[in-house]
Structure formats: C-alpha cells, structure tokens
Length: 366
Image (cartoon, rainbow, N blue to C red; front, side, top):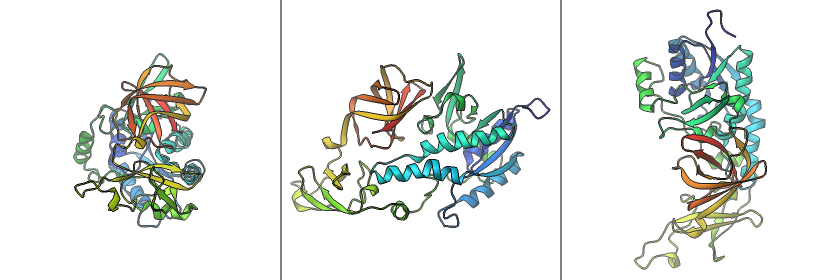
C-alpha cells in the first residue's frame, strides 16, 4: 500500500538511539513514506534508575520531530515476557548463559513488530542494526555490515526469508563514524547520546542483584580439576565460562609460581547435577579449549542447513570468524569442528555460521 503519492511506506523501529534516528532520516532522504515505532518491551520496574525507557521515548519523539516523521509507541511487554524473558530465566536456571538479544530480534523486533507494522500499512520495515540484506534469485541473504567493527549480523542470524524479504537496514553500508557525523550535522537532539550496551531489561544495573529477584539458587563447592575444594560459589547461574573477575579466589599459596606471582583463575565448567563450579588456573588451560561443539535449535536464513563444508563461525559476538567444518545432524542440530581449538565455548550462547560476508544462520551451543 502507498500513501497516494506512490511512495512505499516503511515503518522503522526508533529506540531513541543515534543509529535508528539516522536510519529514519536516511529512509526519508531515499523517498520513502516513513513512520516511526517506539517499542516498549519491559515494564516491571520502569521507574528504577536503571531503566531508561522514559528518556528513550522522549529522545525518539524529539528526533521524529526534527526528521519530520510520525511516531507512535507500542507496548510489547507481555510478548517480551512470554517469549524472551521466560526463556532467558529458564536458560540461566539450567546453568547456561543465554543471549536474549538474539531471541528479542527473532521474536519481538522482527515478529511482533513486523506484524504490527503491517497493520499500519507498511510495505517494509527497517531498524538501525548494522547488517545488510541482499535479494537475488528469489532469495534474501543476510550479510555483514560494511563496517565490520559494528556488524550485528550475529544477533540477527535467526531471521528467516519472510522477515528478511521485508526488511531494510539503512546503516549496512555506512561506517559508524559517518552515522555520528550525520547526527551532528542534522543537530539531532540525541547526537551525543552514548550507545546502549547490555540487555534491555537489565540496563546498567548490577546483574547478580537483578537475577536474585527471579531465580532460586544454592551455593556449593568451587573445585579445581583435581577435585580440591578451594572456595564456595554463590549459585551456578551467576557464573559464565571463561569468567575471571568476581570469582572470589586468589592468592592461595600452593598455587603460586616460583617467583611469587600467580596465574589468574577462570571458570571452566559447571556440574549442574552436583552443583559444583570448576575453576582452573591460566588462560590456556585445556579445560577452557574446545576443538568442536554441538548446537541445537538451529535456524537457517535460507530455510535449510548448509551442506557439510568448510565455513567460518563465531561462538561469541566480539570475536573474529574462525575456520570450521559443519556437519548437520538432523533438522535442528549440527556439529562444528574447528581448525584450532576455541576458548571458553559457552552453552546457551549462539554459534553463528558465515560463508565470507554471508550469514547463514546458526544454533544454540549445547
């Protein structure tokens, strides 16, 4: 549907941040009929100092005013709670470390949001993510952003053909530095706003305190690989593999080097059944290195698994792609074998596959 002028209508998710603000302006420049949509996904403790929803809405509305687009707010808090947050808690309770952004994109930003946008007569939707979509041969491909330092395809790897065919990523070709410059040139009210980090519903608040409210947990022994108890953990949910800070051990005499220095301790393994946290000394301890992994809940952008071949993968967001071979195992499972062992491969995180710049999809590390 168009608005009488033959322009295509794009509904863009506007978060109050610089990226989505500049995206809205770019789309307008490209001749689209642009409507902004602000998503409210969390309301449990909205008045707290850590939740910036109110300020974000003010920012989004004032940007919409400057850019000259209509904006409305939509509340997806109940969908978010059912689809994203419930899963997040289940995973943590099981001792895994989930990535809620991956699920939020698949279930809220490109599902609930897409459905809502269609009721507003949208032809397409857009977001301020750093990624690209390429259409050819009747298929849509998800590609890394040109600015590899900002690329967010890792978080978008669960998007499917129906979602990608209707999605625009205006920032896909642009370096982040340029986005800031555009914001300053347009005198956007949020031009200097710092990028949000962390999980939307936690914001900047202390993570342990937040989880305490929702999870039951019990302390237990902290052990070395030799089975020696060296301390007590506060609950397995609060630790992630490869974690170094905040473990609460150190300076134990018998673990010092001859020169009196001591190697750092790392979380290496969780034994859920016996409630034991295993810690090891030294960054390159064999328990921290994985030559292979298994993943489930696979989701493939093309709608089917890539055939067994050499590809590259990321097992965490801030990581260079590493060479691997994939062996699909049935509809939703696959195995990856790495050319060189990977550090702190963490159950619950996403293993995402690439063929060069093309993001093929991925699964949850089992």
